Structure formats: structure tokens, C-alpha cells
Amino acid sequence: MEQAQEIQEGNSEKKYTLQHNRPDCIGCAACEAVAPDFWEMHEDGKSDIKNCKKLDNEWEELDISKKDFELNKEAAETCPVNVIHLIDKKTGEKII
Image 1 (tube, rainbow, N blue to C red):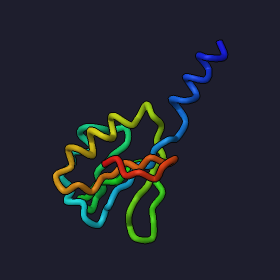
Image 2 (image 1 turned 90 degrees about the horizontal axis):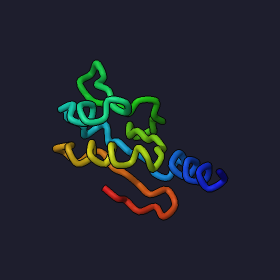
Image 3 (image 1 turned 90 degrees about the vertical axis):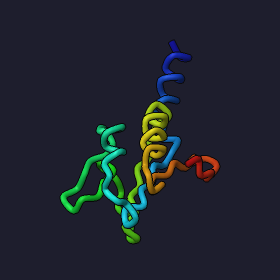
Image 4 (image 1 turned 60 degrees about the vertical axis):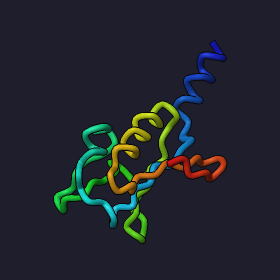
């Protein structure tokens, strides 16, 4: 039982930071199509990360768990202007 709880907690631990360079977003909506639980289109025609932290430079950030990594990686890979990034919080490595 302890091991199952550890695995479950490891899956929900916020290990990655999802970043969005919103100023350079072209509003194609690919991210929202791939991951609608995380992305939405704004009335100004650009996408937003849902429930994110908005930074002074207009970038957005949201810490995500391992279970949400692949879905957001796919969203990042579909972005034609490469404004979505995933950062490993422990190492600081930019994965995409």
C-alpha cells in the first residue's frame, strides 16, 4: 500500500514547468486542440495556459505533474512558432 501511494504521489508531484511565450503566439489554436484541459483561446486571438501565473514579460507559467507532461509535450510539438516550452524543475533543463 505504501508503494502504491508513493507512485501515485510521484505522478502528481509538480516536476515540470510549462511556459508560454505569449507575445510571440500567433493564435493557431493547435495547443488547445491537443490539450484543451490546459489551453484556451483568449478573445485577443492568442492562446492562454489555463490557471497560469502571468509574468511581467507577458509569458505564462504553470507547474505540471509527470502525468500531464506527454500531453503538453505534444501541444508544444504542434505549435508552429515554438512558443511552448517544458522545463524540468529539478535540473532547470529546457526539454522543449
